[in-house]
Image (cartoon, rainbow, N blue to C red; front, top):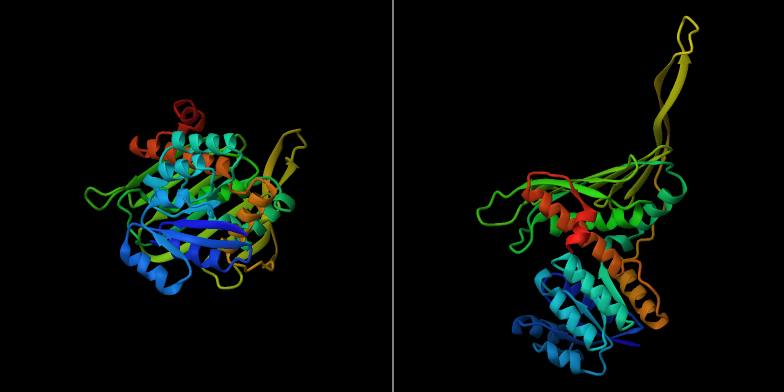
Length: 345
């Protein structure tokens, strides 16, 4: 069994603790948090689990082989680096760091010490997103677009913008699902609360091909929407994460381009757009909780010295895109090349 400690028992920490405690190949050694009230809640529900407010104590514990970090983004780098330097494998909440430079150093440290660094891009491990990846690889044809809306009322964050809180999900999904990586990004947004980061934003990502991606995120919407459209030359996908059962629907719809000679027989061709409308079907999905799947894979990677799907490199690509989007946001939508971010980082 792999001994795991959870650092941070705020919003996401309880989910990590629950899943680790229910995983047969994991041993939940301890939970670390600065709040005595939160630690009391852990002791009440998991009396056999050690609790502490001292992170150094966690690092010294020989039973702890891996550390799951669920703290504010600003603390990820410091905690993860200390864990890696102490010889612990690391599972860190998204986004993995506050800057691409920090993320890059985490990746380098894990590689140097031959430790597993996994980033908690939870949606990548859902049955719906894994099915989308299969469909993109096998049946959608040439990729045209990725279009996502991820909005709700709250939860306002004080340390990061809505891009770093919500768009990070779509950036991790498209990094996993799409056959290409973005080369540039443009972002616009606005804050409607004085002194607080942006609560609404629109991101456009550009690729080497004609593929384009658009992400709309908003903390100030009257309804909760989690809907993504992916269009290809053969088929199209609608992914609605709020649907209880048929989260993925595949449409055999699209356009066809026909060449017709003009009435005078001249060798001039006009492109005519035709429309194809076929069947729709909803594929069966694996409904296992994504975090459970993700943690089991993390344990597999530790035992087999394998590479996680959402490893440090995937996390770094997402952080680089977030940095570029933030820079674009500050300049009212200027297109920022991702290569520019790499040079600066």
